[in-house]
Length: 425
Ligand code: GLA
Image 1 (cartoon, rainbow, N blue to C red):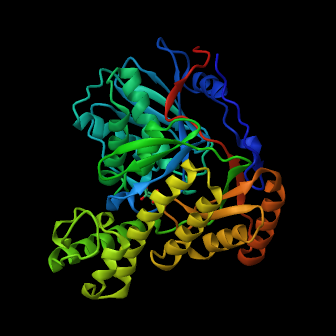
Image 2 (tube, rainbow, N blue to C red; image 1 turned 135 degrees about the vertical axis):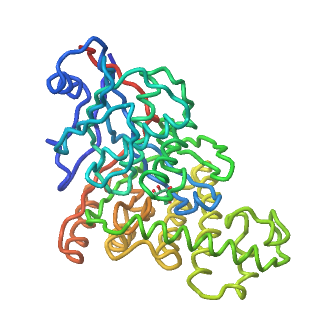
């Protein structure tokens, strides 16, 4: 029987005592729901880091994420009636609905909204639920931490339902269902990166994903004597969703300006006129520079500039990794952070402090924020041998500047969402 081993080192406020172990989750499920005629099945859905390619998945760009060994577990069992019940080991409350009712977003339903969102999208896609089910969630992914706890929930749950009811939904569609639910039910106009990597990841690789076509390539994540350290600002995130939607709207505005201006482009690129570009990332940085004068304000131009330069960095980063050139990868991570700070303005003092403190350490090859920003997490590529001192120094600098601790953990890569075998009692 395969076991999930937790070998990441947890330091600071991220306490080991809170770890969810999937074998215990099935036992806990039986305690809470009693025994039933069907087996309790347990699914593991990973968190992700994005190595590079930030805020360009909704601009037709390439992104370079990897799933990591932090998991959210979904334990689920069919019922003989039509009720659906949700519980979470770490959050109080029991949410109960009827599979036959129309499920709408309700603030008081808290995390259950993510689950109801998935159920309602599945129903809309024609999936028929012959009965209800009970669910118990247990997560080792920090909530609202920028490493995709919500996508892990959406994809883990959608995959679990597909498996137990035999819907046979492809991994790509699991990702699209998760994204659709986030758009329509949760009103966050996210890109596809998080759901896609969680649905399709392969251990020991990062995924180079073309968000315009959803074509992708697994690139072996060979880090020699280095590893990624995840650094959580532990900032209470507020208004993140509305700021995220605002950035997306600014990119749409930039694209509309370029379409309307119909600028012939002289430097080389895929398109010869801005009226034809399907998305911002179809332009090269040089081509965008040619268009600078049509932007009515600097902010919208800067948003577009981040997109085109970041897209270029992703290609270079994948090449650097393939060539085993970690120093080049590190430099690109630093440049990405600077662009997210200065042009896209989604970092903030907490993430800047972490990235700057990390980049000042000699053991660090490169660090940057990861995910949506405005708080959440940063990642640093660090020499194995210097990891402990690295964490100590960055923590000291962070506490001095911010006044409270960050949380740190090292990670390895993981497979995408899957069922795990537990004793099915
Ligand atoms: C969030 C979104 C993703 C992506 C990142 C920023 O994680 O869910 O789609 O846009 O922010 O790169």
